[in-house]
Image (cartoon, rainbow, N blue to C red):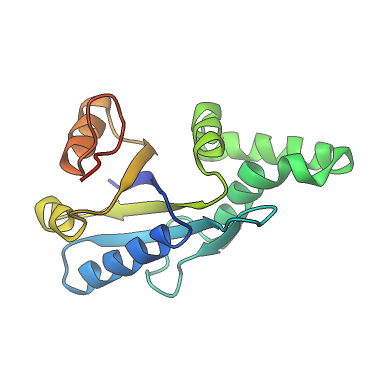
Length: 170
């Protein structure tokens, strides 16, 4: 089963750096990246920039059209105006087909802000201790996932988040 996770980083370059680390881990056969995408929002930019990571991962179950629709839906709705409202309504109907929950969309929109970045990952076959080791000292926050509550709590603990969901300061 594939796992979808969304990680927030405190800097615009954080997600890109993390993806590079994951690509290195994939070359070592410590993780399988099915698909990935990065959202960066540099300080002073009006909106975030998105990039699918198809150069680092194999073609997965989700393709560029999906990522494009998801990011358009997440970050550009307030900017497109009422003329595109009907089209966005049709898009939201389309997301129901993919099983994207409204609370997922709201969580991501609320947490990816100017000066930060996010990494959307679809992964499988993770050697958890080695991946955790590679990210020791990296400040990141798990925004959301398709894991059970118990699995998500374990993942948060493995990557250094306290029980109150605040990232560790170490």
